[in-house]
Length: 73
Image 1 (cartoon, rainbow, N blue to C red):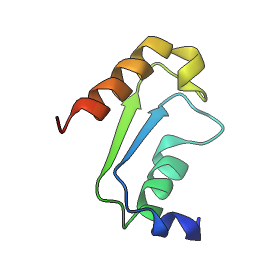
Image 2 (cartoon, rainbow, N blue to C red):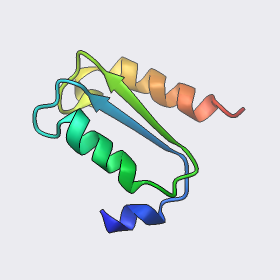
Image 3 (cartoon, helix red, strand yellow):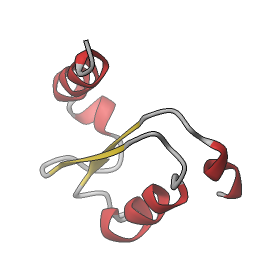
């Protein structure tokens, strides 16, 4: 986790709120806090998704990534 402080690029975190392996309110927010030097941090919560959002909701994840990449254009 110490290496995450070196990240300076913008970061998008997509988290399944039904993730019982890495709980969003604990591990998810902790991960976000380790990215303290990132240019920006965006935490997107997918309410009906569990541990692996790209497999459980690929279209939603793709749309989020597409919007994130296009946000500054």
